Image (cartoon, rainbow over all chains, first blue to last red; front, top):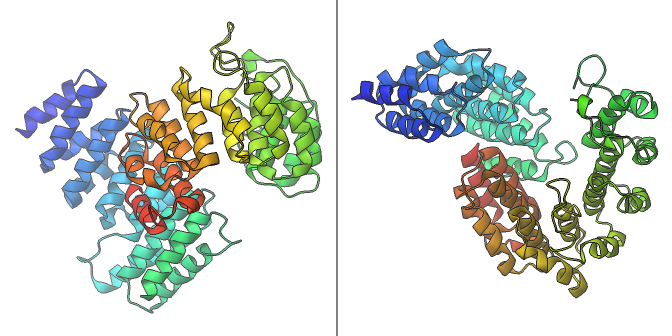
Amino acid sequence: MTSQLIQAVEQASSALGLLQATQALASVEDPAAASCLVEVLGFNNPGAAVAAVDGLIRLGPQAVEPILHCLDPRNYGARAWAVRALAGIGDVRGLEVLEEALATDVGPSVRRAAACGLGQLRLEALMIEERQAVRLRCLEALEAGCRDGEWVVRYGVVFGLEALALLVEPMGDPYQRAQRALASLSQAPAEDTPVVRLRAALALRRLEA
Amino acid sequence: MVAAGDIPGAPISEEEALARLRQTQDQSLQYYAAWWLGRMRSRHPEAVPLLLAALGQRQPRDPGAGVEHNAVARNAARALGKLGEDAAIPQLLAALEDNDDGLREAAARALGELRAVAAVPPLCRRLASGPGGAGAPRSDSPRLQEPCEAMLEALGEIGVHQPEVTAVIEPFTLHDRPLIRSAACRALLQLSGEGRWAEPLLQLLQDPQLQVRRAALMDLGAVGWRPALAPICATLAENSLKLIALRGLVENGERHAASVDVESVLAAMDALL
């Protein structure tokens, strides 16, 4: 059944046809669909790419290897969608890609997605020391992201910092660093965009509650 | 499109931007410098005088180089709108009378950003002939006789809510082009706060054309119309644009706060990241 759906994606002859075939393939949640969904990310069809990202996120960790395997530095569009998928999956194998994306990607929407993803990597399977080391790298990337020039990326950083603070030991050093970063994003003139300040203040209130 | 020294778009310093705007040999350098000063919200005392000098520059269109008519003056007008200095208003009012409609458009937007009450009479005068006059298509281009969208939006931003002003804007809510209707409804909604002007904008969020849905998103955000929260989230458009619109609901929407609180809008933004 999955192979027929893959064939339908490969043979789609219109933008709408590709979108519908991708939606159908994404909905079966079969790991065998992952490579084909990754391919769709490079087709320059935003609707189909959104459906493919949704499908990859639903596949979760099983989709990570196919995504990392196909990351193509020459196809910017595909790479941007792949970052979104990795951010949504939250697997630690995506860490380096997310760090690099937040620090250097030219697209604010990609940096925004990377910031969210860095705040909510799922690390339950790791040993505690490793878990702490990964959280620290995420925290450092998000601290640097506080200085991003685009408000929407800093908004994503606030979201990421709040999520990260809820996953680390309360009152430990990483927790306090996240709190400090949020505090600076909650105040003018350090932060000039009102909606970012409001979101950071909300995050601080929730952490204190 | 625009040369900016050795590396196009490379970061430059404020000093460098001022120097590039001061020289007049290479207009592409001036063009980029004017944009830069506006984008960076330069507070340097020389920024406004240099931009005002640039606003007086005229140059022919150079299609080969991709340079628009009066490119430096247009970018200077845009930057002056962002710098928030009322000292720029008299010269922007003069630019509103220029023969170049692209320059009039940039001036109208800048005067709107500066909330220049003095611009209301000339804007109304230029729009008074309505959709069949100011809003009629030109014979030589797809543009209209006047840059109606920018002028209507400016009237809404400036915020003089008087019957003479709304009487000029209202006929444009029936214009043939959806983007003009959107701009007119936006202005009337900003001025009056009356929900009847939001209805057409909510309908435009369902338009089959993406470009129209995008414009309605931006217009609802500019007004801060909080009751549009759910329709904005549901419309088919990029999350990036929805986030900009929702930022508008948070920052511009205090007077519509009774219907939807800030935390609900922030939760919707989180879901779009």
